[in-house]
Image (cartoon, rainbow over all chains, first blue to last red; front, side):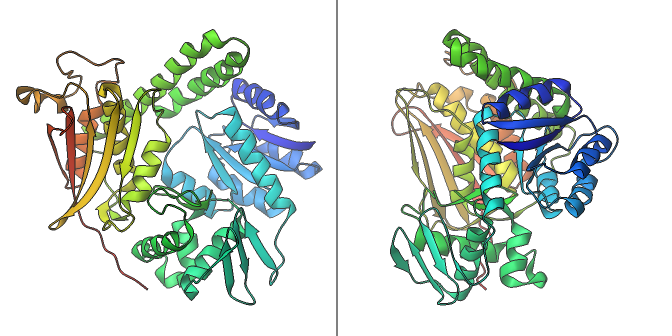
Length: 224
Length: 207
């Protein structure tokens, strides 16, 4: 049983999250504002945080780096604001993932489960890594999908490696561009689109209906 | 505004979803709450359009991504099929991916409400443009009504089986205009309506 800290100033949302997460065998502690949330985090024993960005005493985006400085586990943003710019900012500030209101109970449990699983198995550099049907060996520059080897260019390999390492977590366009092409190219989104398409043609069973490399328009890419 | 509506909607849909597990009769209430959410999204989009606050962020976009995301938020009713024929090598388009997703989702949703058996989504390069076509095999739209359907709260003669927000197609047109796209409507080969969205091509630089 993992302890999840839910931070929201709406009591009805906290009650809903408590029922939803209890059904996933999680223990829930709640905070109605940023001050309470930081106090609970300071006591420790929290496995993951679900944070609403609209808090009464502090800007939610501003709170993410403050929490990150003292908490290394998953921080999932849950916000009524479906504004993509805010999702991107939250991810770039260190949030692990996001859920947009109105949310689905199954989706919340799945996102929390995935975030906790990834947190438990941080990859060791140099080792073989994988996600779903994808396996990669960085030392030998080899990748295979469902047991079949695929030949990737160095950029495609680096891109797939970033996605596999994130283990299903959403990576923003900027994060992927910086990682694969360097900071100078963080806004060259056409590079990313071309490389994602080339990668899909090599790894997806049906590249026109991608199931492995998923996208959220305006935000980024994640592995399915 | 959207923020204020979404919080109570989350509580309503969340608790109804729990209720449906034990009381299947509550599923109509849950479906209605989901419809209300879509209407809210349209209302917010229309308000932004009216206030001149769309400010599209144009970038190179792969239609495979946007069409997948658009259909991800839709429920295909039993008995209907949604066929997608976007080739994996279709040229990129220059668009705001978030506005484009909303546009495409609205037209697919509209097509699903009018289709008898099938909705078809296809894309093809044409000169400097890429054309996305979304067709249904419903009653079609009479020629004299084709301009009017893009007006807010317009309904085609004969109506549809479930009402949308009345803003869906106005958003298709308004968002399209804001991104320099042309939207046209014609008769589909199967007898229904075919909407074509003509989009400028996007950059496709390799590095």
